[in-house]
Length: 536
Image 1: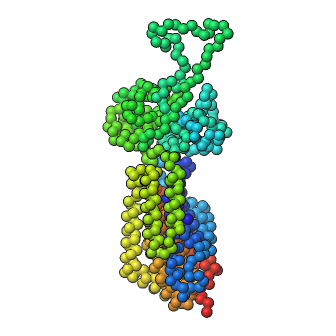
Image 2: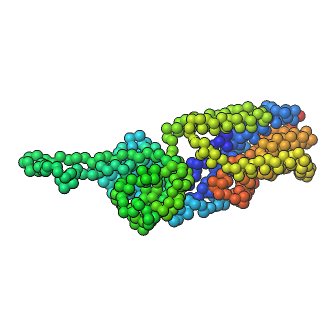
Image 3: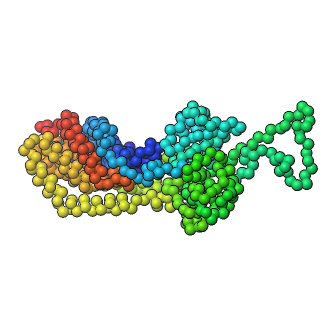
């Protein structure tokens, strides 16, 4: 598969994993990018650079042995060893070189604001029949399942082997960011606190309406048992708003002294209370019975305009929205997956010629984006917010620099001078020089432009030195993709830059040693697989 859409797919998954493991995303996202780059050099379609080199091979048939095209797994002979050694580096020494950047998530975890939350297990929840541990609710960082209510039964000390059932009421305490993750589990929803009959007993005689004749107690009749009226089961409250917000109750709020059930919060503010935090106090009672006090922080399900409408209201001291809290459309998941697979296949099995490959990938990506919007898998506003203009400007600027170096002849002049120095030391030295030049240029220019330029040079070198152009072009394919030392060295490096909070020097610290490792492996393996000298 092509590596760029794979990074786009796994990026939010890795960010979510970092939250659950309580580690910074900067520990995971550079390895994600590097792993997909190394995997991409293991097949012809793994990266568009290999397709460019394959096209150059077709035009260099007179100075190249074998097929006039790159075999589908031909590059795997060197790509697989590079991937194995590179991954070994990343999980050992490379792990110590990764930055451990303090971000907002880590700040929240070191300054926790714990909420009390009730969640209902609905009949369509995939966790039904699983134990607490198997369902992933036992070891979730930042969340603690401290109670389960099952009809009349209350389980206070929840063990990891407790089996979840439909209708279970789960009581959690945890931080807002992890409550957001919990809300994205299908079939796990908050309860509606507006139901006045929930868990209430039948009215006593003292509560009956005035003027109602007294009714004889059934206990006065011998042999007749008092009927047991079951409590009204809790009702689910699916997400209706577009985001979660935190609000702090002010000293002048009309909600003071009222329980959440009686506050009529939904009618007043067109939003619903999901969780409650009270500093310095653990709230063990049902959320609907909590009486609101000054300084209580509420996590509410609200619409897009909630913060704008109420941020200056005397009812609240503070109103702030939480990022990435839009409700998950589980019913659209299969549609989004089908569109993603179609885009992936369209990019992977498009035309081989370098003139059409980029046009094909752009067209396929645009069609996929339109399909996501048309099927309502994503809203237009959310799609616009997902566009990172900083990355777009950086890519455009790097393309301009690359075009300037190519059209001015500077890149060709540098290559020619350095090759003149390496030629007297034999074909392996020429191969090493071609690889190093490609690697350095690829760190500064676009991978496709570097591969096209170096393949042209490799053909002329093969003619002058009597070498086979095939191993030279295989080296170019590897070096043009294995550019780890700069964020502009490969597009996946750019994709993880902002989510990981990386700086330019972070890529140099981890990527430069990996560049050199790939260079050493390639220079050892390529001469063993392909003859450098042309057979006469």
